[in-house]
Image (cartoon, rainbow, N blue to C red; front, side, top):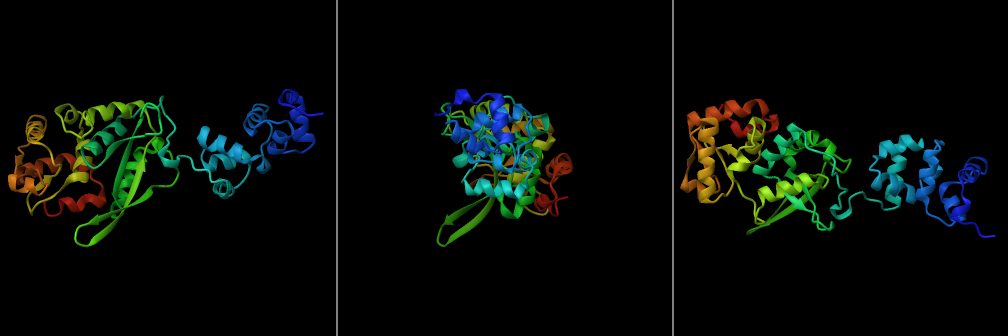
Length: 310
């Protein structure tokens, strides 16, 4: 007689699993059903889960759908984390293949995270679009040269509950092809997709191109300002610093007015330096004022940008 899903009552499942010693995969095959509902029922019955229960289907459920880490899975199934990692690799299970992120609709940015995100978006970071989602959901991403990996890890620590992978960062490479090709390694992190990043995409990329506006600038705190400087700022000479960005003339005017009105800092636009990408110039007095604001938030590895100015 052929058995079906309807025959697998809770009592039958207990008998098959405990008394007969069948694993989830064996029970699923016997009753012509998938692994996931069996795993869920066993968990609801509070039966002890073991190594034999870590089938491919269960791993996919726990790792991809339930977003458990390898350590959490190991603890739940009473195995070593290395065993879970090996099984994931054996089954070619990757949580976010091609950046298909699980939505975090209910998660909101903390004030600290928001400060960091705004400062980073004024600098090198960006809001990407996940084309694998129907509504083109957005995510936040950060890349820094591998020599500045400690700076990136500082950002990752602040954004930790938003990061959808366990390793500290991903590695990317870029090739600059002028006369002689040059390769650079970058450390890279990205977040879950979430509605908050859709809103930030509209704010920072209203027409598909990144902009700088007074509305954005007004969100910057001292931490955000420091993050922006660590991304795009630098020393010009022994007394002055500057910030680059490739802004339009109208954006530069907004920036000059912002620093004057918000921070009482006089900033100049050096047209010669503007051609070289160093748009905003702070003289000796202005540099000291800016440094006094951002110094408490500067990461040690980025202090070279203030060398001889402080």
